[in-house]
Image (cartoon, rainbow, N blue to C red; front, side, top):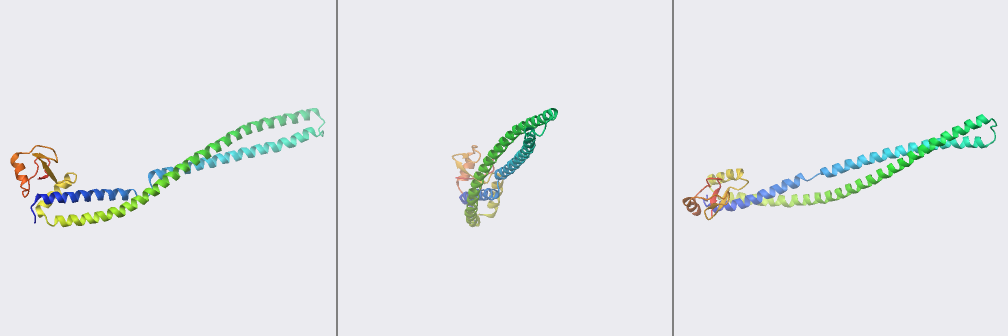
Length: 233
């Protein structure tokens, strides 16, 4: 098995690429399915549909009330002007009843105008909500297609890098590989760090000259005393 530290550096390049693709794959898989925004907008459309149906029901009830009043006023006026009633008091009472019905009708017609306005407002809000839902669903469908394509592509890349990883790891000393894997696990995927003159690029601390010289040989396992990463030049 190889004891060249540079082999670990090349392995780390593969590992970082593999980590990135696994993260990308996980993200794409998590984004499959209906989005919260689409679900929320569907709920908003359902709510506005219910508001519209309620407003339409109210309008119809008021229209029926108005028609009922008109149905009473018409015959009463016909009777008033038919000449069939001769008694002045009966005529006055009938006129009073007609006037009362007309006042009621005027109030109902005012409510009818308000009901019509409420229906129009509810229709406008529903159209707006449906337009927003259509836009969200179109974007969601496009994203879903992209995520499926990404999953297919990145899955192949994961398999490819995983094979490269096993091939590279097979040539590395088992104990050194185990140490590298342990350090990588606890240090954001980076188990080795390149030397920059006498600095560890992993944590940017200055290292003793003898440690730097030992690490530069390329065949000795030297760890940064601060971040524990394996050093290479």
